[in-house]
Length: 456
Picture 1 (cartoon, rainbow, N blue to C red):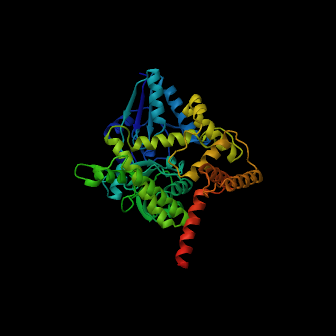
Picture 2 (cartoon, rainbow, N blue to C red):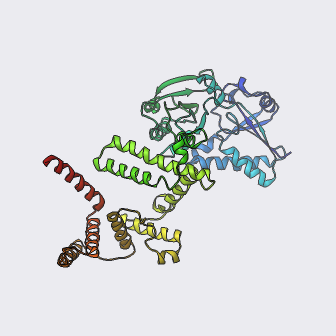
Picture 3 (spheres, rainbow, N blue to C red):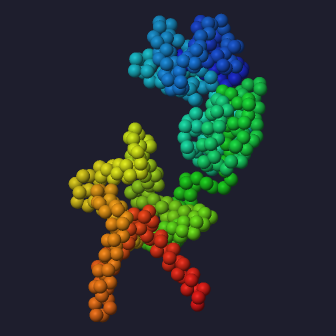
């Protein structure tokens, strides 16, 4: 009958075939294998004709297109009265991109699919590494997927097994991705030919993994956890414990409102570290600021309002949406166009009517006055406000200062409006010069303190 049978060939030698797989293959008259580059293929039981899809590898520039065509051909073969036996390395449900496509297409056509399980590369790799997959929550990743990212989707506090490290080129790309999360010299282990008689384990630092000439399609990478606790999940658990019934009395009493001052103070501590260009202090202060963020998310989670995962997803979605020139097909020529697109996209998020009524609604009123003035002027510029000429703005600033000075009353008091106009004009002039008025004033104040104390 028309049927698709997908058989797992195991990780290596024929003696690792399951009994069901051995029986299925032994009685077959025709077997289609994804590739002959597997130790078991040459020693398949029975007298079946062996066909392969190896010729398709050279005909396609991407694995996605390759596996799509393999799936299409398997479906066509499965329509025959006798169906088809399709054999793949390892287990059909682990790292076999053609299998999910076959199952979806077969379901749409009403073709039955039978899966014959096989031992995957994971079991012999665990045996060689002498580790328990459940002991510390082993992560399984695909090398080509890791290589396609700039930051690995791995928890550094848990071990990881990276499969299908096909070549030195893939290993090099994986290395660069992992170095965004792990130290360059992080100790790792390369597993060569897991499940075969030539299986070996090589210990080496992360930065050397692409320097091994023997890397091939049977190579896997084991990445042990980083010493200590480095994941956001581990930190969130610490904060949750502080708020738990058996946690810290002070932390349990806090609310969103009581932590407002602390959030502001930690923000200024970060700014202070930036002003001093003290990277060690910046690292510490960013941690303190992160604690405030995670604490607020934890309190919201306790009230079933939102949680940390929601916060991360919202900001990730927003960043991707507001950068169509990076994550989409929008073309921009310079930063000015980027900012214009940014404002347009934000406008569609808020709604046209709200944007027209409250064009500056996104600028927090609680910002320091100089910073808020620069944000307002910058927002106005993006919406078409003119006055971009530095000379014109400087002359306007001088005129404003002159008016403020000549408006002094007999009581020697300058009007608040006059001072405000001067400060706004000065903040806008600084903005046009690419300067941050708030930081400039803070540095000058710090220098004044230093000079004053030295002279005293």
